[in-house]
Image (cartoon, rainbow, N blue to C red; front, side, top):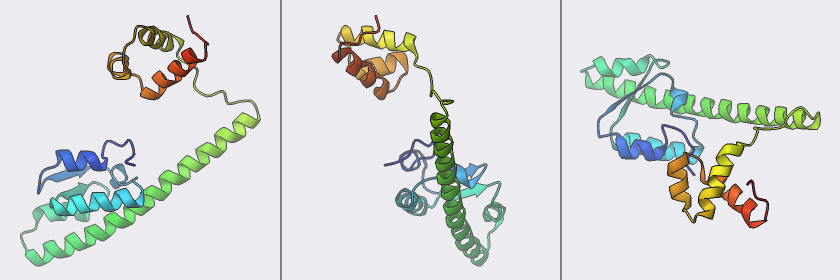
Length: 165
């Protein structure tokens, strides 16, 4: 499954045209994907001959200025290797942060200090009313800008007889 990332595989395939240049601030902005999705993304980048230029990868800038085929091929190979390495590092950093965050939440729960995000009663009341009026999940999602999960949670509450209103 593709993560909710502005640079997901789906976005790359849909919006980038062949031989586009993608300028990113940092490589980790496009490379927090799992290994399978990263390989898919690399295939798309390669297949469309997309060049990635990043502030944190200085050799990527050089590809814009070179007309020498040998230099261009060498820089392309080097940048591809660096991209792979930076992607692996970014993914490790991402998973480490997630793991440490989960550990902190678990510890705070044990100490009774973590309560999670408070429920948005106003939003849930609106969802409940719309569900009772027979509106679809998609309609509610578009109207209120909430997730399907939130709508489903309210719907389950209604079905169990626990009404907000």
